Image: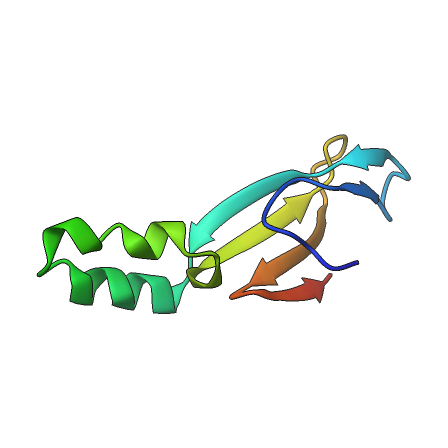
Length: 79
């Protein structure tokens, strides 16, 4: 599975539920670095929050909340 920044249909290996995933978005280390550097230029500091490559997207099962996979900096990784 190639994990996307948005919810997608997947089958859970833990409870066999098949449905849309829950997605948590967090700013990664590079995103925080860009945000800190750009804080000296106020209108641009929010760019780090909007750019997908600077965020990690964690997919979890809607039913049992088990970790399914993650997209880190634009690269998909499985559990």
